[in-house]
Length: 203
Image 1 (cartoon, rainbow, N blue to C red):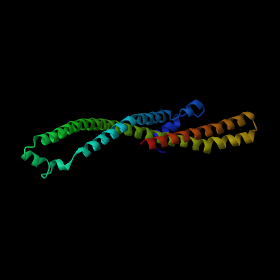
Image 2: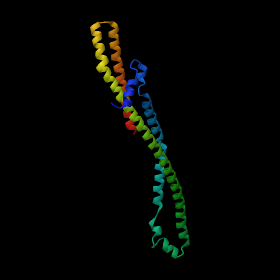
Image 3: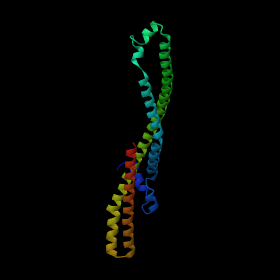
C-alpha cells in the first residue's frame, strides 16, 4: 500500500467518472486474457497425435528386430561362414529396409525436437510476460482497495452525516452516488482479482 506506484494509481483514478472505474486496470487484465488464448492456441492436438504416431511407428519397427538373426547358432554369423548367400541376403535386405525406416523416424524425432525447443522458448517468453501483468494487476488491486477503504472511511461517513443533518435531497442523492461508486469500485476490484486468478492458472 505504501508503494509510490500504488499511491499514484489510487490518486489518479477519478471516482466521479464511472467509465474510468470500469476501465481501471483494463490493460493488464486484457493482456492476460490474450496471453491465455495464445497459449491455448499453441497447444495443437495434431502435434500430440503426430508424436503418438511416431512412437507407434518406432515400436512397430523395434518389433521387427529378431535376435535369432544375429545369433551364432543357427543364425546370421553361421550363415555367413557357410556362405548361405540367399539367407544372408534376405537378412541384409531386411535390416537395410529397417535402416531406412530408422532414418525416417530419426528425422521426424529431430524435427519434433526442434519444434519443442522453439515452443519452449516461446512459452518461457509468455511466462515472463504473464508474470509482469500479474504484478501489475496486484498493484491495481491494492490501489483499488485503497480507494474503496478511503471512500468507506471518509466519503461515506461524511455524506451520511450531512444527509441526515440537512435532510436535503441533493445531499441524499450525493450519498447514494457515493454508495454506488463504492459498490462499482468493489466490483471492479473483484473483476481484477478474477483476472489475477486467470494469470495464476496461465502461469
